[in-house]
Figure 1: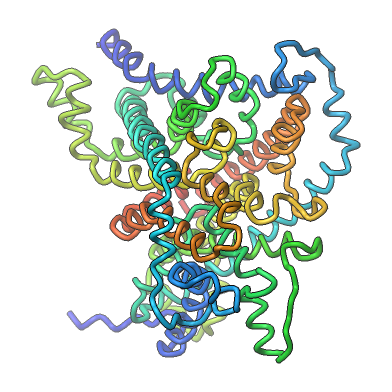
Figure 2 (figure 1 turned 180 degrees about the horizontal axis):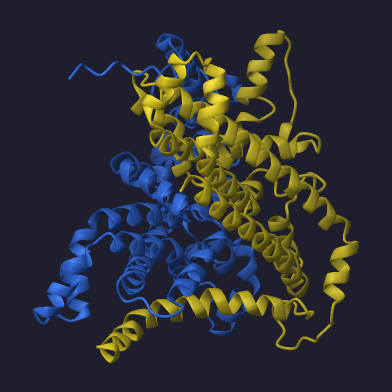
Length: 293
Length: 282
């Protein structure tokens, strides 16, 4: 029987593991290898440069800028969609009429490509006839022409708003799933005992939603670390690198400047950050499991 | 038994909630509505600042332009040629691996399973350079093959995760009974377990189709010539050609999103389930 099982394990796992190993695991490790070289993407010859690429990271002004932007991007990506998603979930959970339609509307942006989302929002920020400037002009009564995406002060935040618009629906459905697990009688008891709506939310609902919050926050962090497409479309990392992220910086160094060795070094740093976050996530998940499982 | 009291959770004023939600819904719909409006307006109307108002008349010239452009046909075909095989392969292989993890576990199989699932969380930039070198060496750059292969491989974490979790809910007794009757594992998988797993397959099909269709990064890296580009890259390429023809750009965006919008409309239930399942169990 054991013999028989072994045969089937190998037969069934062979292809998936082979594909995953060859095109995901192996490249992951060779990234480390290339990060110690000066490969330019085309020559067959390259040489080992030791820790030069990592030393360069330490002094690269653009890397520092990208790291700061990634941090801002991540913080905003956690706070905005999570808060808004929780709010929407609470409102929808109150058995409001048309909840299904509302849910679909808030969720719709998730199925759009980052390219499309980028294009839509580029139009909203368009200086001459964009929706945002049109509205501001209407309110103030004078022609308002501000190029939101072309100014270093607003470029990153403008993209963050577009990103939040797309991600809120995801946070909402995860919170909605979490809310259905909270027994209605529990809240009724609290109400009878005289707890105010705010107290019920703060002391009962929010703590019971902790597992959902862990998931939402982790997803936001992971998705924002991947943040590339929408920035590529809306700002290309500009103006003056004011909206560059690490993922964007890695792409530019590797595929625009053809410094693939240096690009690999940046990707190793990205990998380590992701690893740290995933480690934290699993630990937190276990903790939540222990408390509420 | 008394009638259950209507549960009021947070706000005793349903009308207020409804109003707030409606306002937010309008705000949320505005961006999408803008594209819709632009696609049925002439360039002149838009550049005169009329994009966000209701159109005086329905103008279909933008759609005619998009649908008549042979480059758009090519982009669409390429995207289908990538999305369909990659979706099918990742789900099939995910089912094979998921079956082993759920029904034939072995020492270390849980660690292996978690290792694969962890692949879901890493930024794709981490494997960009080595994959570019690999496919360059194989002479496959500027073909659709690397895009298909990489999407198949990167789809495995979510597919393995979901198939394993679904298979785990199929009673072991079913498998054992089938084995007693003389079936082998392949027959158990294809005749007993898979037919019971159609919901999971539907969830994965919608998720994978949407993600691969919408992807931008991999075709950007692996393809170069215009007739190998997928639709999302194509939209960016055509921006030059239609630089101030905003209406054509809007129509193009709509046409490019149509497949995923249709999937979303018809399989929304699966889609949401997949997003939450993948997220919560991950």
